[in-house]
Image 1: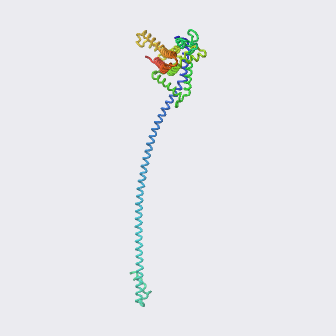
Image 2: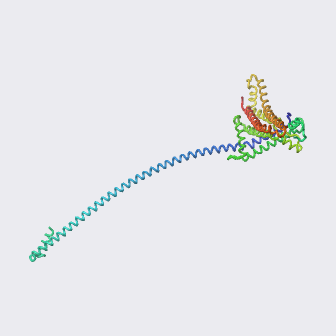
Image 3: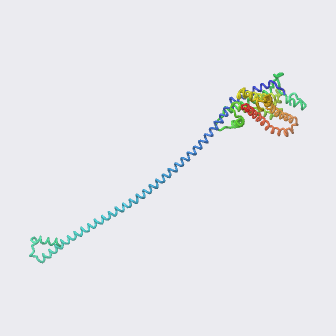
Length: 156
Length: 256
């Protein structure tokens, strides 16, 4: 075992290698590894945040759906109510119309009865006058007795 | 077998355990240790640099995945033990782990492969596992020791550090005993760090060389189990060296 100048040479080689590693090898590698660790941590955090956002969005969607459902039900209920009202209104107006029609028919009938009666009276009066003329052919002057005959016809 | 064709087993073993030394006295250098460790380091950290430069914070593919796994292991180990603020410690730990692991892994190459290939080129001695050279393990452990001392002074201040050396663990009244204890304790750290790695790898290499002395048809019977077991050892030794470095530096940053 002889110790000699080789030791000095080896010490210099060792020092150079350590310096080289410290300067060129260790920093880039550890930096890359630290960056990766950070990237992964960021990615995990982002994933967690994304999951949270999704949850929030789902809740919001649920709320909107619930609201929409409620509104639809309200609309249906309103439409139902409105339809009932319209049916009632239509029924009422139909009833009014029917009554009006009936009333006008009654009026017309009464009027026609009246007219018929008047015509009948006139006819009866004329027949009576004609009868009387036949009976009193000579004695009755149509012109002289017209006022009397008209009065009689109006009374009938 | 080596180029000079050493015939006896002991010559073969000795040949495999001799560094390619150039120069004389203290200024001898082991070319093989320097070359293999330098080459392995350049390849490994060049590759790490390429991966780091193209590192994406998106989905990592292939090699980046593997590198990040190693970085994660080192980072977790550092964060678990070291509680101070020092940008040096984690890269240092990564360097130690990767470099020591790969140099140890040279042990898994067939013991004759590199010596034979280089022998053909006229290089006659070659130890292919740099961590079986105490020069390398001591270079690393003494560097770590230097950092320990440096940060002890830097973090605790000279007064604080001297006070700690004088008063721990028996209180200020037994200052000389404390100092002696402290010197033993601190000297043991780089020594154990270097010798543990060296001893393990040297012993492992020795076993491979011994297995290589067996006749070819039966070598795999012992070679395969030992190589598989050795995968555990080289990883464990790299990990232990890294962990102890972190622990020692952590102790330098914390007051007792």
